[in-house]
Length: 135
Image 1 (cartoon, rainbow, N blue to C red):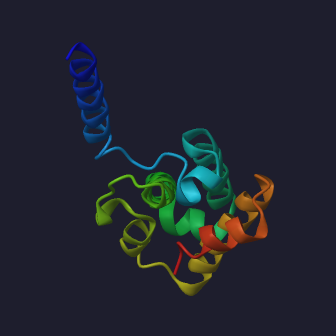
Image 2: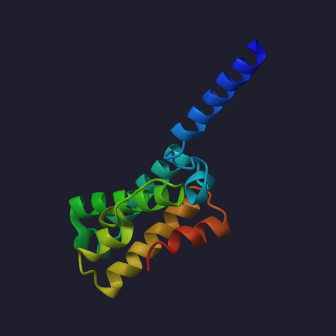
Image 3: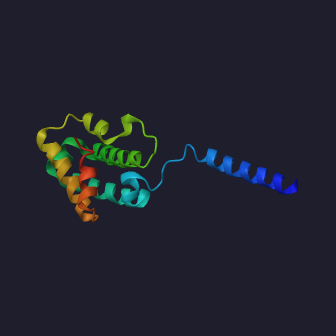
């Protein structure tokens, strides 16, 4: 009887642990995990912001606050691939929509993202996945 109580307690603890993880993001999943989770994605977004600021069309169209918003949009969009719950208003596409960017500025956004990805050593498939976040 004692062994059976231990089994029940152990099974209950395992079940409680599994239930506590039910809402936990799949850390390491999706593009988020491939890019190195928080550290890697933060490095990419900072590089992206620097590239946006250096691009005449994007820096003029977005301004300092806009660049910050677009950087955070990229961060949230990549986090979403890892299972994090992100409100659609926080995603990259939503951040970009608020600025009614000209075709030249949108090209600057794409170029900046490509340059940041190459700078951070993203593989071709990762770079493709990141750039698909900008439609």
